[in-house]
Image 1 (cartoon, rainbow, N blue to C red):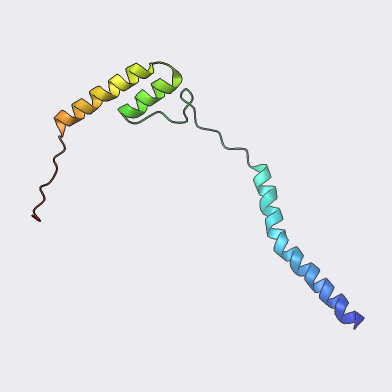
Image 2: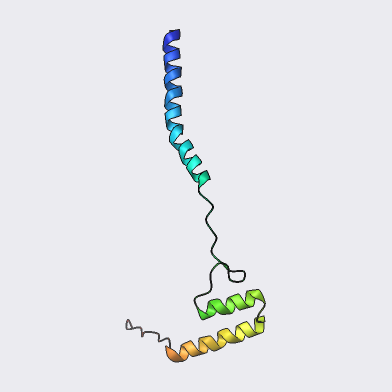
Length: 95
């Protein structure tokens, strides 16, 4: 009976070691790799904005423009977009 328990304990220990072994080697490999370099930051933002709205928001958050200037710029942008591509509401043909 004692022999069976010892064989089971040794077998469990060996199987646990085989399961953990690949993870330990991955951990050692990760330690040897240098940390990735962070992308350059533009102001307080990780990437530069890609739209005019993004540029205006970045300027507002960094204090380059006031809230009033931001609102006025967005109003002008909305008016320009309305002239270029007006929104048309489709007719309701159900009645």
